[in-house]
Length: 221
Image (tube, rainbow, N blue to C red; front, side, top):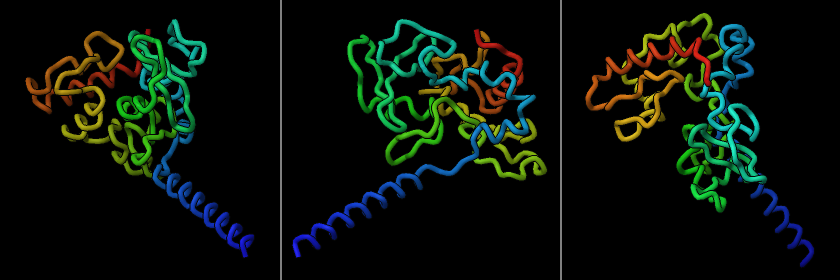
């Protein structure tokens, strides 16, 4: 009897663990990755994507643009001029190096960084699916027939972008508290150096679109 109870308990625990794993997997949406997008966009986007700063918001140590110094146990870095070392801490998790560089901080990256520096974040656990920003992060879950239905991909050149849409997607990361701390593109006259309260949404959206056009040929130094 005791043996049967032990087996039953073990089976129950295994089922609960599997159920938890399934629920965790379902919390991260199924989304098209950049690899599938590049099958068609390999010539217009693929050749220059790695020069775009959105591709390396988080990158492995040693990947360009290289930064130093980093601790020997660091696995990734975030940022460039004001970079912070990261250490992978399980699936979809990073420990963040303190500003003083003396220790690793747990549960900070997922609270302050994950939303703008990774792709497909599980809202329940803050675990991410991919480092950097994949196409899905800005363009959404694009339907497979979008080639024949122009304007279905968010922020695409064939989409009549509503002002609020541009601001909500781009501004969610590039604007904080109404005033940006970054230029938003690799030039010196990026679209974000403004106070949101001092410029209309329409004017700002137009500057965002102009910056996107410029960034197509812009190289990150």
